[in-house]
Length: 186
Image 1 (spheres, rainbow, N blue to C red):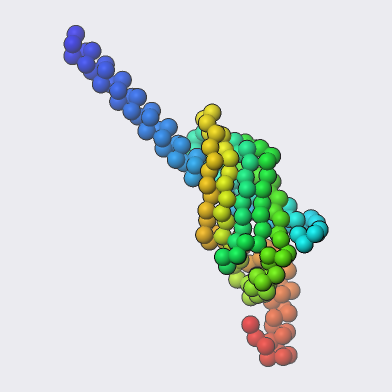
Image 2 (cartoon, rainbow, N blue to C red; image 1 turned 90 degrees about the vertical axis):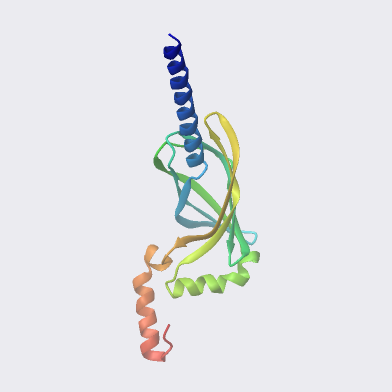
């Protein structure tokens, strides 16, 4: 009888430990979600700001649903702040899935003036546009609300914006014409 009780206690302890490790791993996965900005389109210009609206895909690798209550993200280009995206509109991200979330991004023209030529140069040369992102997201996971710090040093928005937005062929044609007629080859 004592052996049976001991085995029962050890089995129960192992089961509890396994559940603890499982939930700990799922929490780590939920706090390590990934996202990709699908597209941004300009929607308005006012007071030295350009507003873009688009879609951001959030990838939740966890087996539990996660609720994003709000987010506040600062975007940096070559180390300088160029814009901000924030929202207090909550949305749910289903487990083991990718969820399209609305994104409103405000580009501050005064802060971007110095970097505009560098960004346009990358678009013209059909090179990747890489931003740094710092901020936080307020999430609810398993009944617990947390502020999740987000810091990505090199977020590649697009490997070739011109092709992505449909003007890659005309841009390539213009560059070829420019090279052939003016000998300015890029």
